[in-house]
Length: 444
Image (cartoon, rainbow, N blue to C red):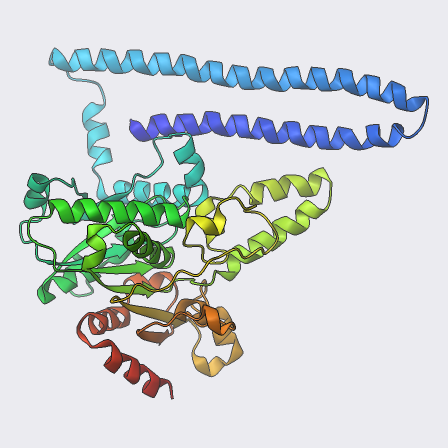
């Protein structure tokens, strides 16, 4: 019911936004002939008078569409409220509601639940900031999860949900448009679902996963994760000795942002952070998002309806997506700036936290033997220099303590690939200096 109501609200919001876009386009088209005629008197005076009438009429029409749309929404709200009240009364009387059993069974179907989760995560990636601003029920709320269940961060609830809790925590952070299920795959032998986290349990780790709205700014999600970890440590069933953050793609940037704010705000969990691993993370941005910015900027340059409308649609993508243009981690990277400015890199230096071991895993989908093509493609979404913290400007280079480049793995495959798990184990068990030396030797 929550999702259905939120979807209905989204439809009404879409009608309003489309009306705004049509009105802007209408004004853009009408403005040009009036401006041209305005330079020719006495036609100019007549054209301006006619245009004044047109603007008033057009405005009333568009306002009527908006009023009708919101009126329909208000009426449906009353209808839903009445229906819910009637159903509640029927349940109290013990009446069997038609279709309720079938609806419950459908909602609990694993395939349908998985599809719904993926669709919701993808929607949040594209317009999660808009959903959150509208307080739409489809906006994902930040939460920590274990065994695909949301954790309630109270001592009693955590003790019940994590009966075998240990003092070593490993938090997995998914990327753009994904959810915590991205870390799971079916075992090739048994067919049962498994994940990196579950495979770490024999090493004494308690694995948890973050689920968040990836359409929000990365720094907003970093702050939210930092707050959640403070609440987790305060309510955890046993003393926390160490925390490891593992982030895939955008998740690596969210993890770095959380570490920054945890330390800056002197939150208790930050002292427990020992390791942070970024898997396929675009520390200096992703080429696909930069391409989107270039296309939209070129379209905006031409003052025609045929270019302005597509530009507005492209620029409607979420704040989280736009942060991936240059790998924004901090509030000051985006605050007060034009998010659609042409290739305007406003990123600030976010130094690694002292005492924390940082690692990366990058990938080339095409082998290094393919030369420039392999470097250009990277893992198909993130290039190796960006994922490994390598920058042409030496002052911006990220001094990772450990790192590894995999061959023949694509971006999404990094979340379940056996070779990635091997590197994760190595990252958790091998001294940083020894591992870094090994990487340098193997690269040579």
